[in-house]
Length: 291
Image 1 (cartoon, one colour):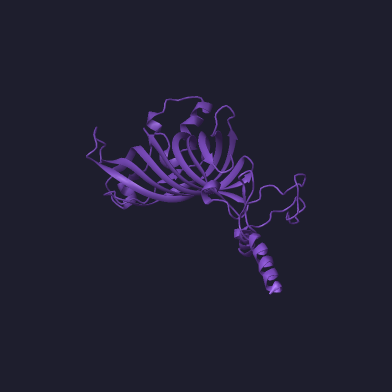
Image 2: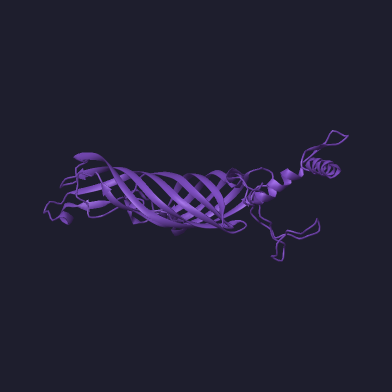
């Protein structure tokens, strides 16, 4: 009987070790049972980080050097995301299809004439960044626009279409609207490289001049030309210390967009080619990720 009572006392004393224990200062300590449950769950999927030498940091103290830029398994997706919105102005090469009209050019020095082969391309860009296996990747969406006047544009004679009539169809002013989908990879702390897939809508009025070149065209038609293409870019960014979340952006881009269909009433042999090759300067507002 005494043995049974002693056994009960021992068991009750052991149970206390598995229950919350309240101490005098009001702090409740976690029970051993809770610790056991945490251990059984493998600490909720927690994984030890790495020391600077690459070994496990399971045993470390405040003096231990840790490997930089380590991701934790339990980190929130939203905390890793970065968001950006920016504007840039590009100085781009016109190419022959969008070259300035020779009839409207007053003779100028050669160094001034070089600028007649350039046009301004405005762009607004949105981006979302996320680290993938240690690589910082950004997905981009950009919208660009330009309005060009007194442009040689596309030009076609009836003789090119096999006719004996010496008539012409030509274009002058253009409205360019370009949408880009891109991917950028961080190569160095301030340097990114990437690729854009581009789609364009080019609006113009096509004028029809019959034989004899009258003062006014016989007809004019608003035409929309659709294009698609690719471009590669290299982008340098520098944070502006006095403006939080704002960075200066300088970008070199090379590529072009080729027309694949249009709604013109005329049969065209030429297809519009839009150059997006140029030098871009802008700013970007960026937030999120490691701040």
